[in-house]
Amino acid sequence: GNSVTQMEGPVTLSEEAFLTINCTYTATGYPSLFWYVQYPGEGLQLLLKATKADDKGSNKGFEATYRKETTSFHLEKGSVQVSDSAVYFCASLFSGGYNKLIFGAGTRLAVHP
Amino acid sequence: DVKVTQSSRYLVKRTGEKVFLECVQDMDHENMFWYRQDPGLGLRLIYFSYDVKMKEKGDIPEGYSVSREKKERFSLILESASTNQTSMYLCASSLEGRSHSPLHFGNGTRLTVT
Image 1: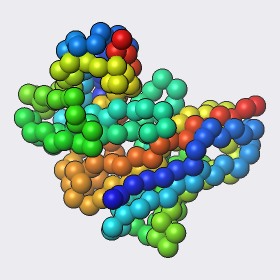
Image 2: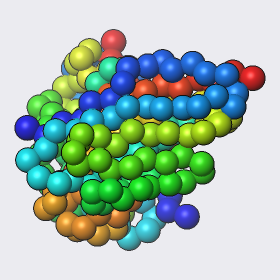
Image 3: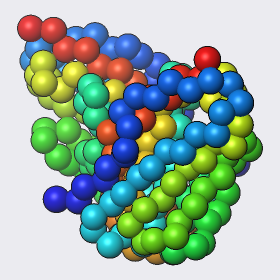
Image 4: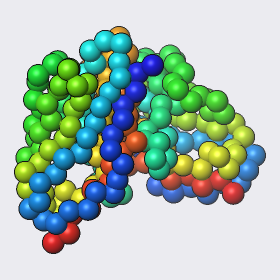
């Protein structure tokens, strides 16, 4: 079946460090891919997305590239801030799915000054 | 800005009680969803609706039902609450049918069943 696997957390970094959160998917086709972020006490917000192979999604300094050959969509940021502390969810959407997203387990990021 | 409002932030209920979780969105979205969020499991889809009075089972519908009598409101019902339904419940809505538009989430309802 279709699934999303992302690296376990928590990830703890110092401010201005480089961030990578790994995400891979299994699919019978070519899904659209997303990163959502959940700040403390809030619901999820869309961070970025990519809808086809080699697309790069970017927002707020975060980037992720849709890699068909490795079925991956890793999230990166060159210099994290304390305000980036949150839980990050990778998700996939398959065509004809009425926007039914399949989410990964989530990765908690803690950034310290 | 789209606003998805969940009626309660925290709920504590007893085993066997009937529980209603309410969700309202203010942007005329067709699609609405109920997820539960558990540590290590991410978000799992319980039910969704793509139109008034329409509903579809998600991945874990057992023990739940839903109601969508008006476009803006989507209710999740626990007919007889059990302790394994203690969780964070997230409601979401989106604009279009089959093509993707972002899901807009409420802030969640943390339900504890004792």
